[in-house]
Length: 96
Image 1: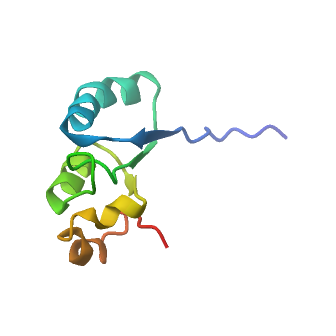
Image 2: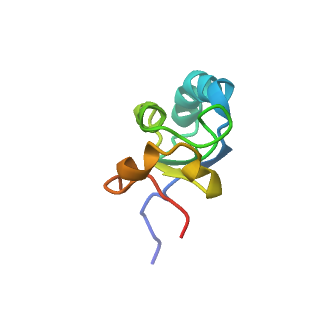
């Protein structure tokens, strides 16, 4: 029996670093996701705020650019304002 379900296309973006990285995502991601029919976008945003950490505003900016999940690492804690924000955001993953 042939599987007629369409495969899910997931696109993973490595480190988004600072404002230049965010600008590149804003300019390139819409066309890329349309061209390749991407269903789900995951991006590492732990360096999106000036190369160190991420702020609530920047996290919202990235989600507004059709990124579905933001991953992070040890730099997530570099911007202290993210600590209370991260608790209820299921789309913002933090390291264990």
